[in-house]
Image 1 (cartoon, rainbow, N blue to C red):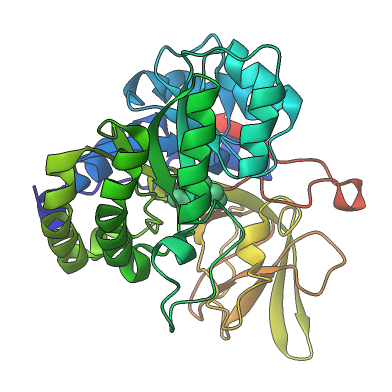
Image 2: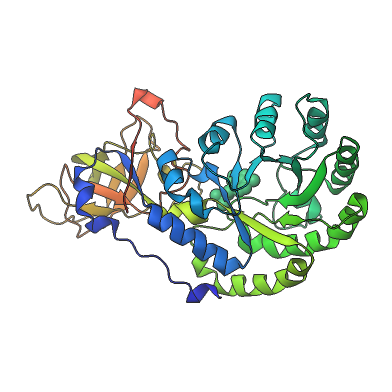
Length: 383
Ligand SMILES: Cc1ncc(COP(=O)(O)O)c(C=O)c1O
């Protein structure tokens, strides 16, 4: 299977008649699209694929899709663990550098796989009274250290452990009766094109030392992924990557994990235009939702801001003249950074019309939700 033979699911949020009756601001998620994205990415990789719940922890969506997440769900907090406990039989994997003894104990009680981020977490496990020897464990490696921190692709991050600590962790866990099943590495979001080839190569190189310390073959490696929302456009990279993966897949079970690549295209954000005005000759649409409900649209952290063009869903029955200039779409806070999109000249738009922003199915929770005591966004599922 190559990426270009996998059909992209099509969705036309803008023509869905239901959009106009939703209470805005809101998110609309489509379970069918989540399922399609998940199976398409998994086929494109040809490996197992874990789902990062942090990208979309919506309970209703999870209930509709979880049957498909057969390779496991990755969780980073007690809240996320609570969302899935009792609702799936597939593996639960708890992975966070900020593991507390409570979270570790809850993970053990719910028979989740623990991903150890540091030797300190190994010590925490060893001192827990509730530890169970049969629990499967995974060690998280630092991507930068594993790949020997090559120049040019960034300084790395604070996640995971160095290789020598990982070998020490294996020895210490063996002493307390814990079987290390696998290794995990995640170089960061959107890093697939830059980091993945190096990760495969360096993980393959590290494997013999790990297996020597374990005294047995390693069951699995999770190579993370860092797949962007538009992973389908990386046809060449996927073909090369699958070729590079082959030696590793012959030696051990390979997993990847993804959040935004699965959920991002499966949701949209909808906001209503409250007012149209002109400031200093610049047209502006003030909306009932913006930065406080969909933080990522405001692109506060990007140096070059490429404003998204939302679709207009006409509700107002008047026909005003088309825009003669580019219009700025702004949200409902008092922050000057609350600019969430643009509409091009020629667009017909009026107060009450809805604006639909595609590609907002992931990290909807990444928002300063209580700013100005504004109402939080609503969430809807359609299929
Ligand atoms: C360990 C780990 N895995 C996976 C993800 C998911 O990243 P993405 O949504 O970019 O696929 C994250 C995101 O922070 C992460 O920390």
